[in-house]
Image (cartoon, rainbow, N blue to C red; front, side, top):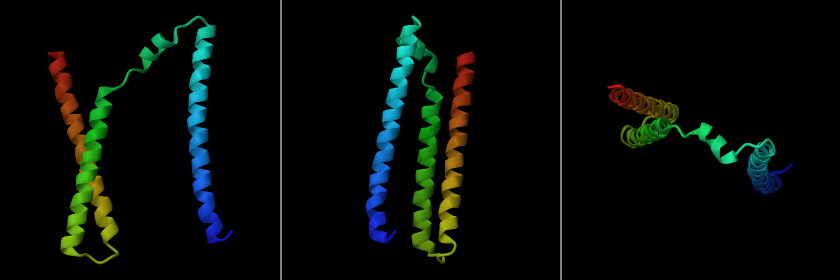
Amino acid sequence: MDQEQLAVMIPMVVCTGMFAMIFGIVYLRNRERMAMIERGMDPRTATDVKKMNHNAILTWGLLLVGAGLGLFLAFLADCIIKPDSDTAPALFFSLIAMFGGAGLYLAYYIQRKHDRKEVE
């Protein structure tokens, strides 16, 4: 296959795959609800088991903020220091990982502090 054919095929395959994935999720969710109705269960009450974890929102938010801050600082360091091209990717990956980890630690600290307040 040459480059032009591949350039046309990739968007078609990606769009088809995304459609199939969304269709499959909706189809399986509908099928699960229909099976619950057939057994005499109420699908609305069964979704209470799948409550949203509010701590996960905090964790993901702080992880993404930390990764974004690390990416920004790596960009600034790359512009100011001008390291050779071999070490630039290492700088980006290391700062993203370090600040992402700091965001996760901060989320853990906030959750632990919140849990201690609930106990008291």
